[in-house]
Image (cartoon, rainbow, N blue to C red; front, side, top):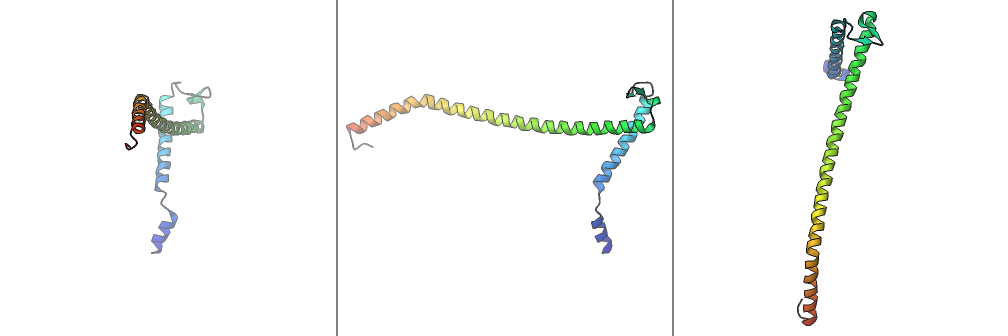
Length: 132
């Protein structure tokens, strides 16, 4: 019983550990890629080639690159959500405009007809007060 309570108190943290593991794997893969593909002078950091850099500088640059990637992805996701919301709002406003146009067109076309009907009803009522 105590073992179960202790496990519940400590919390799993499984997802956070998984994300940390993914970050470590991404940094290791990025560092390998920099040393493997950047040795020919294709990659420069602060104007220096990979051979001129200390390992902690390369790892730091990879970490900054990964964080930049994550911030860019999150920003892009926020942009997509905002764009979808704006598109939905545009559709709603477009439909509102269509319905307002239909209402105004119906009023413009039926207004004179209803006015003529009202005038006829008033004239009939004046001539014959029993007609409602």
